[in-house]
Length: 201
Image (cartoon, rainbow, N blue to C red; front, side, top):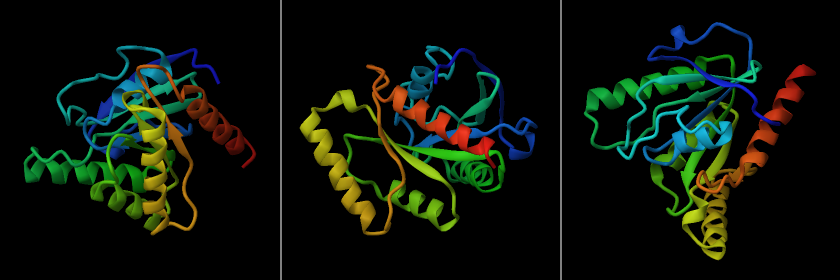
């Protein structure tokens, strides 16, 4: 798949205010500073489409981007940023939960994980919650250019082992680098496959 058109449509804090349409939505989520906005910009090849920041927890809203006039890419707020107040964390938790559970157009949730880190409790618990609620998701390891191939393989193998303690079957797994453009074709190819399969339903 090639992205020929990508444009920002709307930001909001309420699922009820999300765009009214019947197109599939692919949402991206992860802990603060995992490289979400950079990945979106890399996929669309539009450097300033999603706002990137060195400050964790910058995305505070649900951001919709229309791709090729046929599907939406959705940038969700990052979770687990400890420096937020309790009230702010609770507001974001509800926003994420409402979107993930009740947005019928949400076709697949891409959970981003920094490949340099060992499995984090917050990520494992979040994925377990997705499984319990029957939410379709895929795992995207980010920043693979920051470590060597052998370390990367070891980290991902370890992550799979930990996941297999809870999961019989693992979701699709992708490896990406926003700096190098690695994983772009695979990720967009997967979205294309899902879009095609939806046409048959």
